[in-house]
Length: 400
Ligand SMILES: Cc1cc2nc3c(=O)[nH]c(=O)nc-3n(C[C@H](O)[C@H](O)[C@H](O)COP(=O)(O)OP(=O)(O)OC[C@H]3O[C@@H](n4cnc5c(N)ncnc54)[C@H](O)[C@@H]3O)c2cc1C
Image 1 (cartoon, rainbow, N blue to C red):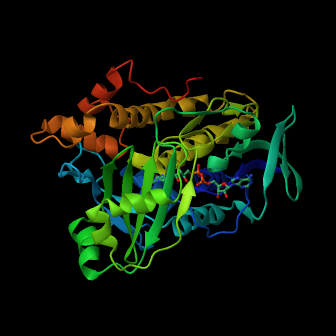
Image 2 (image 1 turned 180 degrees about the vertical axis):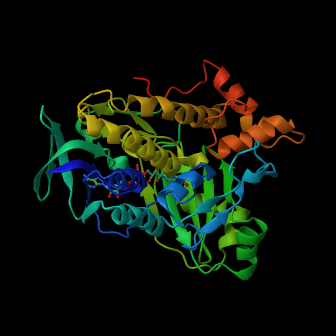
């Protein structure tokens, strides 16, 4: 019997496993797929940097691409805005990384293994049942017992789907079609990685947006996100054909097969109970336009470990509200990003603030700190403005 079973070895699960194991907790990570495996979600935020340090991760040494910030374009109007994280409010970490997830996720998981977590690949979990003495985790290889279980199964949302507690978030992005382009030309690579300093590009398009994420090794990830239902693969080609920038950047480059993900942007309205909690995408998934998913999953994982370690020591881990303080803390980030995403789609914030010709310097710096995920501070006028509107404010844990 392990003390804790973590289901899912993505960045959220690997982070909590690493920190639990470091504290001497006996932890098993059960992962259905062999690693390394492809995953989408390649652009990280600066707010992760202190956690990478705590975990002992060497991001630059691993060759991940430096990311200076984010650039927004509207090719229809010719508008362009560039935000470098180093221009945020004082104290905001100045850069982030672009990562190929197969390698990044394996790197986070390596830290967990180094700390003493046991990882088992090829084990699919079918359910988690709690009783007075512990939890039974039903797996493809038979049942496992533990004192506590964490559902870190990402968008598979094991307990959310099993318990019918997943609710779609209206008006956010619904689906994405994406692929990688390889062997970028010298000129394109210089534009994206040198001149652009590895920044993500976001193109605003009809009914959605496009990501352009440079990745180490002269590769670029391109994805189209739409709010329209019934998406098919040809959305990618249609968007590409309408964008001179996409055509120019990817001209002549070999491309991978198209992939598609549907039905994202949801909340899990029952994400904790006695001896179990859901973490990362298993608890909440926001439209990825501001690249918040990996960072918020990892920061939640860090906080989970910080509450679970003392609870296991005092035998209070059966408290169904054990991880409520983590949800309360993370609510600040999810509310901020959710409200920003709502404003991105439903207001003129892109034209009036992102593309403002003569922006208020304090608002601009505050926007940049928000984009960096530096959202737990109380001196950000942009964030205050965003959260002030009761009507537009996103409520991450609403029942609706
Ligand atoms: C189109 C798109 C673009 C995105 N872009 C970005 C971005 O640019 N930046 C960003 O930060 N985020 C982005 N995200 C979000 C990001 O991918 C996720 O937020 C992040 O991966 C969440 O981490 P996690 O650990 O919660 O889950 P995951 O990384 O999904 O890990 C879950 C793991 O659980 C395993 N698993 C699932 N079910 C079971 C089971 N039953 N038994 C055992 N194992 C199981 C899976 O195999 C997987 O390895 C994007 C998401 C989408 C859909």
